[in-house]
Structures are given as structure tokens and as C-alpha cells.
Image 1 (tube, rainbow, N blue to C red):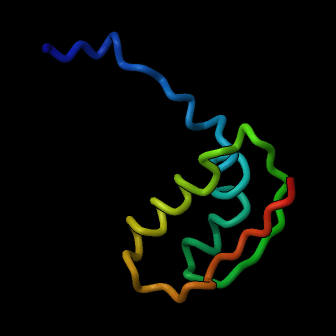
Image 2: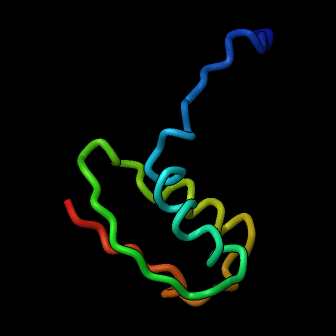
Length: 76
């Protein structure tokens, strides 16, 4: 199999709830390692909600943050 960059699938990650909601509303707290809580409306189409944000936490801090540093209360 040969890699062809013209055939790379665009997952449109910029349209995910993680990018549009979590990283926008929690981004500054993530940068500064500050505690923050938010409430968010979600639907059944947001099944991977939190995946990108969680990966960003892991990439930056591994397991060095307290468990309740970022709290997201989901409605829906």
C-alpha cells in the first residue's frame, strides 16, 4: 500500500463539539492548569464528546492533574 496525500480523509474535527465547545470554553483554563466547570447541552450525535479534550489533557499533563480539575456537566 502506498500513501497518497490526495486521498487523506478529512474528519472535519473543527466541527466537533470538543472543538466548538470544550476547547473554546475550557482552553484558557487548560493553558493555566486552572480548575473550571461548565454545563453543556449535548445530543446523541455527540457520541465522542470529550475525546479530543481528554487527549489534549493527556498530551499536556499526562496524569499530573487532580481528577476534578475540569468538570463538564452534560444535559441531553
